[in-house]
Amino acid sequence: MKTTKTYKPCDLVIYGALGDLSKRKLLISLYRLEKAGLLEADTRIIGVDRHAHDNAGFIEIAHKSLQAFLNDDIDTEVWQRMAARLAYLKIDLTQPEQYQQLYTVTDAKTRVMVNYFAVTPFLFKNICQGLDQSGILNGDARMVMEKPIGHDLKSSQEINDEVAKTFTEDQVFRIDHYLGKETVLNLLALRFANSIFTTNWNHNTIDHVQITVGEDIGIEGRWEYFDKTGQLRDMVQNHLLQILTFIAMEPPVNLEAESIHNEKIKVLKALRPITFNNVAEKTVRGQYTAGYLKGQAVPGYLEEDGADTQSTTESFVAIRADIDNWRWAGVPFYLRTGKRMGYKRTEIVINFKQLPHNIFSDSFPDLPPNKLIIHLQPNEGMEVEILNKVPGIDEHIKLQQTKLDLSFFETFTQNRIFGGYEKLMLEALRGNPTLFISRAEIEQAWTWVDSIQDAWRHTNEKPKPYPSGSWGPVASVALLARDGRAWEE
Ligand code: BG6
Image (tube, rainbow, N blue to C red; front, side, top):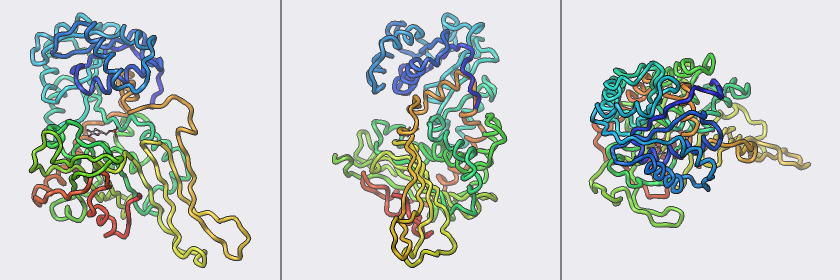
């Protein structure tokens, strides 16, 4: 990754500036970048939305968003600096002539125009047409977009085709906010800066890999979106597959975007398709029922506000994924993600192979294999489970399972990345595409996910119920038990 500290100042235009994404994530990240002194002095932030406000009205909304979502005191001096960058334009995104207003606040001669599409993809075409018609874009301009980029391969191609009429691929920055998370980035360091792992990262030493992204939240008022989407499309197509590519990719020749994208796409291409013939043994779909979380009673999926009580949308998925290449032959990757699980936990467990022979069988008949556990969130850190001799002068050597434990909180005092958006927002302003997703990756991920979705449609089975607060349906345990394995709990 390039570590350029300075970059050309930007006109960051947020379309959908009054929407949820902008208020909950983008404005908060910009404040944190401001606080960290990482926004170029001349960078401007222009909110665009269809509601009537002047600059002062937008500044007030931004301040209220910080009060609601920052989870920290607002530093007055930092806020004043940020507020001075803010401007607002009322634009009906479907009316191309209204984009002319952008000329009043942007300056293509001295600043790069970064267009953040924080709106539904239905409006992408309108924004592109409006920008084209206004003639305001030059070759330096960028556009940033994020999921959902379609709900299947075809719709994602349509969106990408539409955007491609206005922006070239190297002007497009597709966000997966997991790639801005410190611990996901650390996978690169772990794998490619440590010979102990680099040399052992393959089917000779690794038995299987588990990736768990468990959330305690439910649908949180997003029924409309979520019920049409489901956990497979909402989480697996993007976040889980991105984590998988970071674990499974070959060493890139360097940290340039193209090198990394090339290696990731090879992993996605090597994913063995899951079809009607094997979907029942390779996947589990679940839907949460009422239960308890942190001692509180919570409703089931079908009892959420606005729910269609007949919905068969899954809120939980478990998958056995196989990567058909030399490195990973015979090493399953078990993926599991769900809403309303016991607690929020994103974790990767690398399970190493059991030793072929045990010389400690007198005291320890079954030598448990080593594990590398990477906690992505919360409590970021890493643990290596090893066997150690219990101190003592007994005749027999006694062994005990112990942990080498690295907590990022305790080890590093530096400023931390919070939700991933700060890092990605900054990289978009810097124009560094390394941590963004290429069109080829998105489309390859959809190809794999579409096949699963089609197979589910054909089997027409309802998702299996699981109580809120648990770790999914019993069938998810059986998925691993069939292979003689168990989820890390
Ligand atoms: C989003 C999904 O992409 O990621 C949400 O749409 C999910 O459903 C969220 O809750 C999880 O993100 P994080 O950073 O909280 O793990």
